[in-house]
Image 1 (cartoon, rainbow, N blue to C red):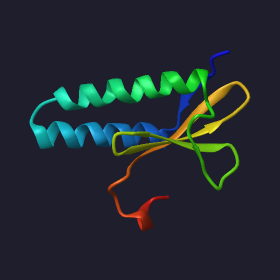
Image 2 (cartoon, rainbow, N blue to C red):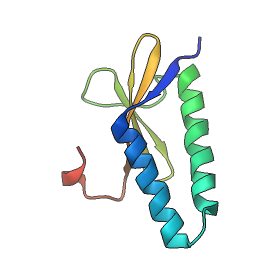
Image 3 (cartoon, rainbow, N blue to C red):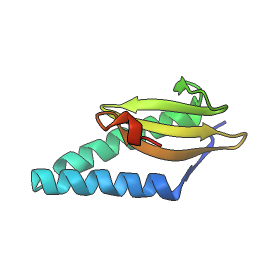
Length: 96
């Protein structure tokens, strides 16, 4: 049974920031649209197979990698909560 997806405020802000960066950097929305499709497809797969992401040290929290981005999410009984989308190239010390 597919789980419902809930985006945390932080994850929504992360996503918006990532797309804004690429839109400005490339002077086009083309890459952002492609990246958005990849992220949406990864999350769709997570709704059916929530435990395919790499486990973290935090119980029920997993990471799914899409290109250089880490989708950090929590698996609950009926839902998946997207906690953050992290650019894997960023400074680890500023992560969480």
